[in-house]
Length: 234
Image 1 (cartoon, helix red, strand yellow):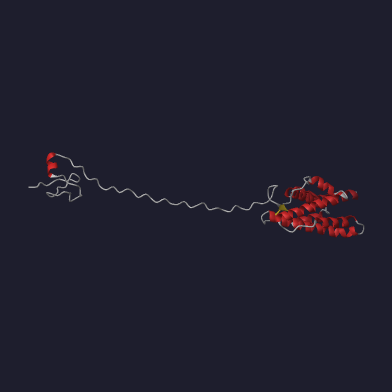
Image 2 (image 1 turned 90 degrees about the vertical axis):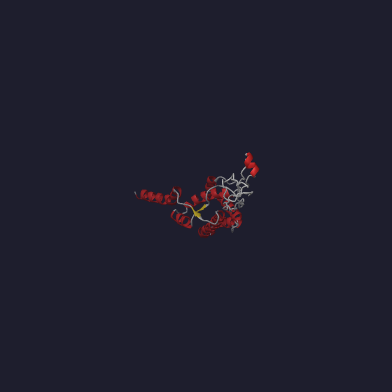
């Protein structure tokens, strides 16, 4: 009679003569191995390795466009005098404020173009000296035209402007008309400079704030005029 064998894996008694356990499927020992005490190693269960996740491709970094840099070698924002300052301060100061405008503009323009005019104070003083004034104005308008060319905007003909400035300023009789013509030249020049600075500043116009020095040059002549009027009446 064939002996029933006990499954060494799960302990289930199998039917006689079976080669495998009916419960877990493990190999059963042969009858002669069971009598001799031979131990049959249990059949290991199938070990399912965890699936390795597929490598996710890292998307390439998206190149972001850097903001266009302002072509400004002197640093900071490119500020401009607003029209109301140019017109109102020039009128109420009897033209004295234009010296402050000339100094600030000369300093700014010298930093934007290659020029040997790095002395805005001397240039402003030269604007007050007859004859020398013509060369000072010529250099200013020539460099403003250079800024306009650098910005790709409409410039000015510095040579013709200087000739008309000299004629209207120094030729007898004609210089009376120069009182009107010369300011027109300055307004045109200021307009071209404002357009060039706006282009260099990324298309943004940044107006200059009224500084204490600007106020002194604008209102100083009025204060002095009042003082002299009071002294004269004494």
